[in-house]
Each structure stands twice: as C-alpha cells, then as structure tokens.
Image (cartoon, rainbow, N blue to C red; front, side, top):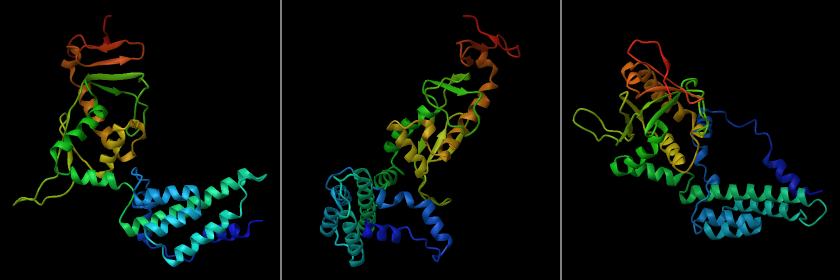
Amino acid sequence: SQPVSFRTLQAISSDRRGESTKPIREIITRDYTRLDPATFTPSESGHPLRIIEDAFCQSVEQGRSAARQQLGPAKAEDLLLEAFEKAESEWDLLGRESAVAIAAVCLFRNLAGMMTKRSAGIRLGFHALEDLLTEYQECLRDNTRLRAVGTALQPLLGNLVFKFNLLEILGQPTADEVEPLVALQGPTTGAQVLGAPDSTDTAPGHDVPSIRVTEPSYRIPLTFDFYMALQLRRKGCAASSLPASVRAALDRVRHRYAGELCRKQEQFVDGRTVVVLTDDKKVSLSTPGAVPGLMPD
C-alpha cells in the first residue's frame, strides 16, 4: 500500500549480478570498510557529518536540507533523497500500524543518512577512525606518547604479578574476572615501546614502532590494529574482546614467558613462582629436582 516505499526498497535491494568481481573490490570491502564515513559519528556537535546525522534523525526532509547547506549534493543524490523523502511521507506514525511505520521510517532515515554521510565524507576528506589514525601517526616517533602506550600494554602482560592459566590454549579468549582452575603465578615481565627507526647509512627507516618485551627478549610490531586495541583497552574493553590478531601476539609472549618460568626451579624453591589452585592451595618445590608438592599454610 506504499508504492514509493516499495519501489525504493526494491531498487536498493536489487541483485547486481552483472557487477565486476575483480579482486580490488574484495580488498576494499575487507580492509577499508571500517574507514567508511557512513559509520563515523564525530563527537563535535559542529562537525559536518554530525550535523548531517542529527538532521536525518529528525526526518529525511531535514537531512536533505542540511546536506544542501554542508556540501550541496549532486543532482542524482538529491533525486534519491527526494525518493526517500516521499517514501517516508507515506507512513502514518500515529496510525494503527505505528510499529511498522516507525520501523520503515527509521530504515529510510538510516539509509538516506548513511548515503549522504558517505558522500560528504569523501568530498570533505573525513573518514571513520580518523582521530585514532591521527594519534597513531603522531606517536610513531614520539617517545612520550609511546610510553603512554606501554602503560596500557603492561596490564595485559601482568602488573605486579604475572598470572597465567595453565589450561588455556593459544588464542583462546578468556574473561578477565574469571579465576583459572590452575594458574602459574610469578614475577611479571616488562615491555618497552620503541619508536619507528629513522633511515641510516646502513638501513632504511620505516613507520612501524615496536614493542620490546623484556623477558623473554622478543619484539612485536605496534601496528595500527594493535594501537587501536590498546586504546580500546584503556577505555574499558575486555581483553577477550580484542581483535584475534592482537590476542595472538600477546598470547605468544605470555605463552613463551610461562614456558620459561615453569622451568626455573630456583624460583619455585624460593617462592617467587608457584602454581595456584582454585581452593587457594599452592604447589611448589622444596629443593631443585624434588617432586612438586603443596606448600604448607
């Protein structure tokens, strides 16, 4: 009963089987979708994309007006926004089918807003994650900023005490608040974030900082994904929610260090390293080469 809405959605959802399937399209979809301006909601209320988004939250008509003021959409884009506006006007938000009408209106506003934000972002040079990318660029060789990155990294490796779940496997997401059944506990390892090297007479420079783990001696490239994960961690993101590539890099360090720590018998003897069970029992060694046993209370 809403012919404009029907035709608009039918055109948008049409099957484009005749399109090219070149690898570049797959690369862009895989690697650059997260930079899409359509997904970017700036925190500044006066940002052009924020103004457009807020206007489309009110109605397609207001969003269309805001788009004209910010950049002046192309004729084809304005015609499409006109179709969205007509489709929105077909629905009665106060009628008997108000729930369906609200869902339809929200859909048209979202689609129109995303399309307009993408167009405006491309023309004006805005993209999603631009704040993080700028921060990452500024800290490539800035030791002060990189020290702050190291501060966010240290809790993932262990603060005052290194604690490792002896039953976990490499890459397994684990909740921060869950106590492991069998845990290896000992001195923590440290990490130092090093800036990207400049060019020298013997080696070319590059733009990727690195993380040097103290023990075991090991380096991890501080890629943008890694940097973004650490920033999310500082804002309260759980370690289990970090990207798989970041978890794998950290787990490799933790597993290597735990493997070396398990073989340092002198640290078990003097009590610096123990195996902790869930009932607060601790397993240690009385002398090097002895059979492991429970420590007395």
